[in-house]
Image 1 (cartoon, rainbow, N blue to C red):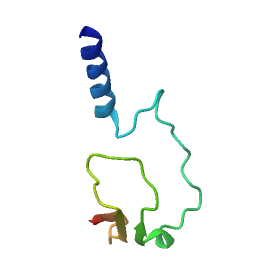
Image 2: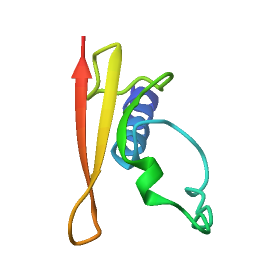
Image 3: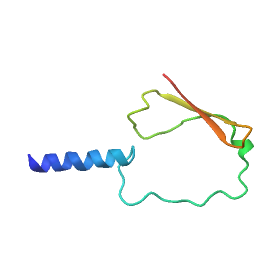
Length: 80
C-alpha cells in the first residue's frame, strides 16, 4: 500500500510539471535566427499530439495574429 501511495505522489508531481512524463530537464533550443513572424501568422492545425487532460477533440487549431505592439495573439480552438 505504501509503495502505491509513493508511486501515486510521484506521478502526480510529474503531471504537475507538464502534460507528458519525461526524465531530465526541458531542452532549451536556440532562438530561430531570421525568423519571419509574418509567415507564421494564420491558422495551424494539429496533426499529431500526446494525450492531454485539457484537449478532448480530434481537430485542434491555433490561429496566430500579429498585434500592433509586435506581440502575437494566439486563439486556440477545439473542434470535435
